[in-house]
Structures are given as C-alpha cells and as structure tokens.
Length: 495
Image 1 (cartoon, helix red, strand yellow):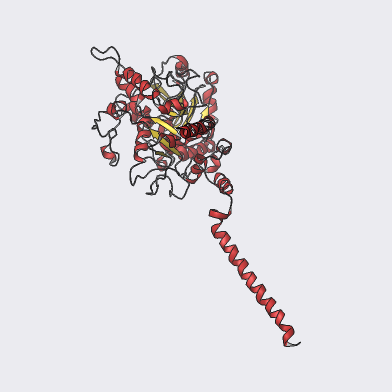
Image 2 (tube, one colour):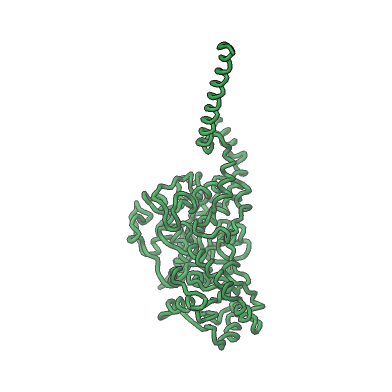
C-alpha cells in the first residue's frame, strides 16, 4: 500500500480519538453542573420531596412515619421546597440537637414570620420584665438572663413563650437553632403574622378581680389587643386569616376569641370552642408542655421491669365528658396490678406521678373537663404506652404522626364495660408492647419545649404544622392580588 493511501486512515484515527476525548470531557462537565444549570428545577424539587423527611429528624425511623406527600406536594411552593432543603435531615444538622452555627437566610426558612411589636404588658411584662422605651423585647443572647416562665402547672400552657423566644433568637447572630421560622421586618414579605400575647399566662395570673378593679387585667388586655390588632393594615388585608395567635389554655382569650376568630389559633383542643371559631381546617393543635421529668431513653424500664399494668393519678370527679373517670375508678380501683387514685401537684405529686408512669406498662389518658390534658405527654416522655379514652380528642401533628403506632385508643362506651379494658391490655403481649415502647423513644423528642429550640422538638414541629396551613392562605392572598396590583400601577401612573 502506498504512503499516500495511508494518510486518510491516519487522519480518521486522529479525528475519532479527538471526538472521543471531547465526548468524555462533556460527560464529566454535565455531571458537575447538572444540579445548577442544565437540569430543570422541577426535577430537583421532586427528588427532594421524595428523598427527605421534611418535618422529622434523621434518627426517626422513616418506615414508621406516614408522611403525607399529598398534603404538600400538590403545590410546590417556596415553603414546601425549602422545608425539604432545610429540614433536620438536611446537611445543616448532624442529628437531633446538633444544628450548625450558620445564619438562617429568610429565603431559605420554612416560614417567614412578621411579629407585632406589642407593648411588653402583653408578653414579657406579664413575667415582671420591664424594658426601656427603646427595648420592647428582652435580649435573648444569654439564655440565663431571659425572664423565666413560672413553674408548676403554669408550664403546661407556655407555648406562646417558647414560640416568641424562638422568633427573637432567629435574628440573633450565632443563634444555634433550626431554620424553620425566621422573623422578618416587612409584613409584606411574611407568610404569617404572629401576635405575641401570652394569653394563657395572662389568664392564670390576672383573670380575678383585685381590690377595687371592675374589670380584670386579663379582660382589659384582651380588649386592648382586639383594638390594636384589628386596626392594623395587616389584619385588614386578609381579615386576620394570616395571623397566628396562641390561646392554649382552654379559658384563655375567652373575651376576644370571637372577634379574632378568623385568625389561626394554637390550641390544646376544641373542647370549649364553637366550630365556627376553631376547627382543624385552620387551627393548630399543640402538645402541652409535660410537667414530669423526661426519662432518658436509655434508662427507660422494659416490659418486665414495669410491675404496674395500668396507671392513672389525677382528679377523678370531673364534669361534662370527664364523668367517665369516676366510672372507671369504681371499675378498676381494686384490681391488683392497677394504680388508679386521686392525685394533685401538691407535695411531691408531680414527682410521684412521674415515678408511677415510669413503672407502668400502660398509662390512662381519660377525658376530663376538656378532651385533652398534659397527662398524655407526661406518659410519652416516660415511655409508658398511652391508653387514650377521649372520643373528642384532637392530637398534635397527627398529619405527620400515626398515633396508633404508640398509643392504644379505646372508645368511652367500650371502656366502661366491665372487664373490657383490662382484657384488652392484658392481651397485648411482650413483643407488641415493646414495639410501641421503641416507637415512643423515637417520637418523644417532638414533645419537648426548650430554648434554644432544636430540630424536631415541639417548637420546630409547631412551625412545621403552621407551614402546612399556610398554603391555602397564600392561595387566597394571591387570588385577591390579581387585579389589585394592576390598579395600583394605574393609580401611580395617573399621578
């Protein structure tokens, strides 16, 4: 073969080699940059929604959590995608209670919250704190200098305190907390408007008349609150539907709740509310703050180490739906492996109750004057399997938690049948109980209130629940703005 005939073959070989090199190089570049420039954002949104647990922490067994993708994946809003990006299972945290020291970007937060700067008499002033004219809020940089919340049973309705502290700390440099809610200074940029009124504390401390008072401080502050809030442009914009108000004590906000009823409430239950004022469509059920000591999961007694089968201690003679306690008392009080007795917080009552729950396999949560009580959450942090006998009870975070995995539900009509309850509980064997006990150890962290807040604790979970209620509000707000912005531009141009 001549030298001339070989030249095209060489050129063809060189050309193929160069093309293969370019192909390999382009493939590498595609892999490196696909997440930022070459793949549609919708693909990554779907990936995040299907590969992360938005509201729960990495040490929670995802198999046990029925996360309702249908709730938040219908509309891929900023809040939904950011929830995935900034959940406790993201790279920002190394596990429960270990958030990194990284400033929270408002655009990266699950919720942007505008908080009214109400006078201190509505919040920390109720704790005896006195700020200067230039300081409406106490500094939260040093946790040891924050006004403490009163102890005892006052603590069980202290949600407004923990949520307010969390928002204040969201603007504090080097704050170590989840990036779930962040306070913004412009209400037009907010997803929700927070009203920082310590309503439960106000009821507990100021609902009675003193001296020559004709109107209690509690009622007076509620009247002032209605006037202050309903006259704000933020309230008028949506008729209060994008406002968040905590009224956890069943008697809190009693005088103002009707006038502020369009707002989103944080409640213990709906026992003392008409359905047009409070309902699951718009409101949040938050857990009581437990009053017994939390047992470390590693110290929790096993099935064989708990000699008591069923435990209940508390007020026995109640009104309304709580009359069932009296019936159950007479059915169970003489059973050998049952502790069912009257108890109060006086003396060592709380400590004794905690010890009793930690020594029992099952703890009764029976309806009282209202459908719920802090007894359920005391049982959870002692890993005593709750037995819920309260037909009208609403439970916190039930859209992301399946309570049947760690609680027993018994209808009131069945519970009062002789032998029914004990036969049911004695029929739950070692393995079944242990499975529920293990699940309790996984979810107990969701019922802890603390400052600073931690990923997946009660504060973080409440903000997550609020975010899941925000989508319909945003939808209505956006529809309302269809022609409003155009009209504003026309008016501006005509001037």
